[in-house]
Each structure stands twice: as structure tokens, then as C-alpha cells.
Length: 422
Ligand code: SF4
Image 1 (cartoon, helix red, strand yellow):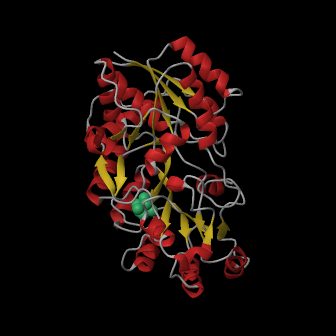
Image 2: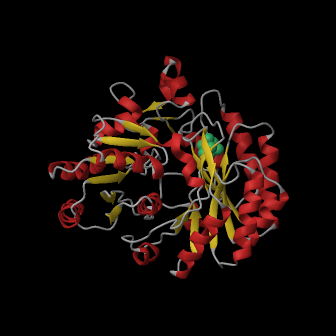
């Protein structure tokens, strides 16, 4: 049995986000017979001191850090997170405890982040099984080479298992999170079948959880008084038959929850929206564009179906990509005006992530470098934020006019669910 300290170093609080990934990891570790303690530094006044104290009190043989994001991913008022995380990892290193890093943001550039924050090992992808493999290896006295990154996607199938417990929230102060404007998260699947050229989550292996496990987990959370959620799947509608099955199970449990989710512009059907409403979903954020055929028509139909079932709609709109003219952007804004969702968040600066089709194209074509915001050279893994903008802020403002439907991202720190609950 290994003793592992799970650390949430993410201190972004606009709004704060409970460390869902660590809660699932904690359950997987207990199922595998290990002992864990979860240290959530989100609200800590002195995170380095809190971390030092937790290591000394618990005496772990290893510490696991989650990296939720490299930075805030928005150009204006960007916040870079890795330097603070590196400072925290150095506290643990100084105490002689090896650190393994993982999390969604870590998977965007595993090798470079590992080096930047000074962790010994990493997990690229879901950590539930890969972390247990590492712990078993350490218990045998078999220490992987420094810098080893384990492939969590290879073992991602374990997410589909129905073994309980599904999730542990010990160490996470939900009372404080909810008081500070957070909602809880949950997950029905991992990965995405989409191929959006700008996205670091594109074409990730999709593994569905059992509808029973998702529902049982939420029933436990509701018994703790937590009723409002945001789904943490990349996009919910990967496979329509799974969505139907999951939503039927959830609706049948009558948990009295309300929740928000992300969706792609395809696939969907009318039944999906009817089942979403029956299962308590009251806000859908649609990603646009996803680069699929007939996207304007699909989008308009999805908005209409959502409204028919009393579900509010937000749009995450990304524009200004190479090859997209101002006329194209103006046409898309008119599509949104006609469909009339509740709000459209406009992002005219796209964060470039290492390895994405868009980053490769832009970095490899000097003719596009005029649109770069940030340094590409001497920036391994594009860790320091680099954006591309093919359409400037002033022009974007002119195209939008004074239409209150649109909000250009980066001037206020708020999420769609916060905007629509005002
Ligand atoms: S659909 Fe969403 S998560 Fe999937 S690749 Fe596109 S932007 Fe990324």
C-alpha cells in the first residue's frame, strides 16, 4: 500500500473550480488499496506553508499534482499558472518526496510542463489506472527514469468500470466553493471525436462511463446537499445512443439537480433535448465552429430545440482563423443573431497549443506570423501563451456594434452560467 498526497495547486477563483479529477483519482486509489490525503490549495492563504505541513503530517511516499490549465487561455488579462505550480512542486522536492503530475492541462504539453514545473514523472491522459501502475512499480522498488511520462489513454478503459466508490470529496470544502460561486462537476465520459484544428482535446480516445455509476455518484453528492453542476466532459454529445441511455437513467433517479453542459454542433436529435430537460439540464454551451458540414443549419436547429424544451443556450464562438475573412465573420454573427441564443462569447484570439493542426500551420507559415501574439521562438511546448488573431479587436467591435447578444471574452472573468444567472 502506497501513501500518496494528492495536491490541487489551482488557485484561480473567478469562479473557483473543485478538483474533480483528484476526487475520481482518490476513489481509484482506494479501490486499488492505497492510502491518500487530498490537499486543496485553492483558498489557502499560504499555500507553500500548507503544503509543507501536509507533507510533514501525512508522510507520503509520493505526491500527485494536478495541472488543470497552463494559463487562463484567453488573450486579454491572461493568467499564467505554471510558475506558481513550479514553486509548490519545489517545496515537495526539497522535502525529498517525488512528484508525479497529470491533469487535463498537463496533457497539452506533457514533456515541457514536466520540465517547467520540476516534477519527476507525469501521466498524459486519464490517471486512474496509470497512477496505480506507477505506485505498484514504486512498491516493487522499481523507480522509472526521471522524466518518464505514462500513457493514461492506453489504460483509459478502466473509467468504464462500475466499481464503487466512484468519487471521494474528503479534503474539498464544498461549502466554501458553493459560497464563492462555484458549481460542482461530474463526468460521463472522457475524450472527444471532434477534429477542430485549434483544439488540444481533438481526437482523444472516447471512453463512456456506466450510466448507473454516474447516477449513483450524483445521488451521493445530492445527499451532501450539492444540487448544481457543470458537466466536465469535453463535449457531451459524442454518441447519441449513449446520451439517451445516460439521460434516461438520470431522469429516472429524480435527483432534483440542475446542470450545464458543453455540446458540439453534431450529433443531436429532438429526443436528446427532451431528455436533457427531463434530467435537469438547463444550460447548453455550444462550441462554434466545429468544422462539420452544414454547420449553420445544425446550429440553428440545435438552438431552436433547446429553447423549445426550456433550456438556455450560450455559444463559445472562436473566430479570426487563417483564411477566414471579415465577411465570413460578419456572416456568422448574423447566423447567431437569427438563431437568438441567450449569449455569445466572442473570442477573436485563439490560444495555440503544441501539436494542434492550427499551431503547426501557423508556426510553419511565415506569411501568417503577422497575426501572432506572443513568442513562438524559445518557447518549447508553447507553454508561454501564444495566440493568433486574424481580426483585430476594433474591427470585431465594429462588426458586433452595440448588440448585447455578444460579449468579447477577456474583459470580465465570468462563465456562461454566471452570466446567465445574473
Ligand atoms: S468538439 Fe470541442 S472538445 Fe472536441 S475537438 Fe472540437 S473544440 Fe475540441
